[in-house]
Image (cartoon, rainbow, N blue to C red; front, top):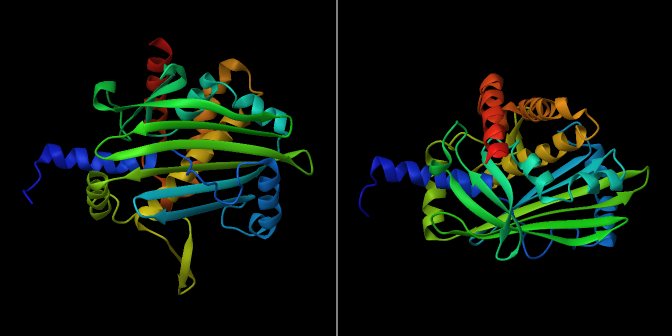
Length: 300
């Protein structure tokens, strides 16, 4: 194998971060929920112990899985909102873009037509400011798979990613549970081929070598030993996207002129509660970058 040039190595590293962290997708078969209100409520019953006892200090369950050529992450969150409020905050393409831009690596998002149907044009980039021409464009189809009074399911899907990555999809489903609360389930996965596998190995051997996820494998002298590798990547970014949804919902009732800044502050503060896994940039750098990216998003 010939040696990689500096430019090609940079592209491989970025593609790995992109593949592992920035695009979201649901696997064809749901994790626990089965894609219905009944199945999601059954998952709610099964996870009562995990909701009450976990490392997050809130009723949240985070899972990951790995199959040949595919990775998946799932987050289940018990939220103190009625189902109507959650559905009302996530049922348009524009709302999804306002939520997705909170993520560190989302550089731009606009509602668009993809294949003649509703979709999102999303640009994914590094954790630093950059022009869109240096980012990766991904066109997601956007589908309301189910919309009922007590249950909804919204999915995004993109066929292609960079350097052999493919089959990106996202799904957020939710149902009402006792106490006028909502159980929300976020699932994402992606496939990767030979180039994607090489990019992932390069990333995990360099920039991602010391990074971990949230699953505790064991204890070492009373300290948790966290999962690493590709599942660690998936878990970190499952959490980042869940926190984007959570921060977005927290600001629904905030006056419009204050909403954007409050969302950004909420997302960054939430990620900093898990510095071992999620810290990447300083607060002021994140806020300045996101303000500029949102201005760009709203002006084009």
